[in-house]
Image (tube, rainbow, N blue to C red):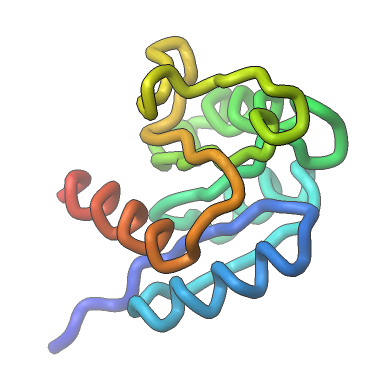
Length: 134
């Protein structure tokens, strides 16, 4: 008997980002769900219960991803789902959220990745985050 594939939810308003990363994650053996805004992402997370969420920081508004992460942590159904946050905030503003390539301690996510994101590398980060969860 084989284990069911791990379910990953991608939440981003960039359809090209969603498609490229969906293909890479599926090639790595993950089941992939997508949402194009933070509200849809939170609702889908609550109903589908993914094993991991990849959340864009600058989704509908500049920092809407932070609000979505807070909403996910506020619901008991989604509070324990690991989140990898991705963002082009550094490219857009010059402000670095990651410090020396590491996520800041105050950010309630397992990893923070600056865009542009190599889809194969992101799939490796997902695998590592889910492997550490066992």
